[in-house]
Length: 284
Image (cartoon, rainbow, N blue to C red):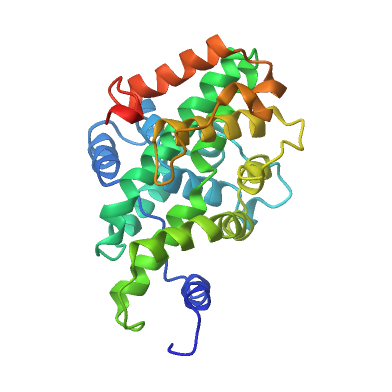
């Protein structure tokens, strides 16, 4: 591996199917408990699944596999479970939890994943809130799932980097700066690749592709609300990368959605209350 770039090493590991998306450990335990107590028909089970990008990706991957070629892709948890059947769907989730638990246990996942999970949840909840507030209630659930999945490339890359450092083949320790640079610069490409290879719904793929594009060059409401939620989370300090100086009302997304300063102030307070205990990022 000495003559290969880090990007090439990561790509080879992914091509060899050596990388698994990590599942939130606490959520994995809750799902195991829920399955044992209530079985695969539990509404609580599928509500838990909708909180984790890895579980959601694995569920969509199974429901939109080549076996179902020619059918319209499922775009919600309910549609995926209906197509697979609750028993088969629960098996997919159990396997994803086991594979997530089988991810190499090094230093990177515990250090970075809490921030990535928090950001994914912040964007999901934020995008749904914005869709409802802007009068697009019918798109609120799609906005939530799009927000949850928009940065899945970061989680996949982090798992790949953990594999690199744990396997002993690379022979070096990765600095925080390098890890963050890889995640920041490569996550859109890797996210799109994951969507392509796992046959994930195209309806969310545009959000993955465009959520960092500076200009708002789309009329897609879901893309707009996720981009605005993403910026709000960065301003609030939710996630690895922060930008407290962002002025949300001046963004192209806010102007496109027609949301005013008062509503955006309420939006920021909602994020702080839910994810920061009511404290602005500057205070802690």
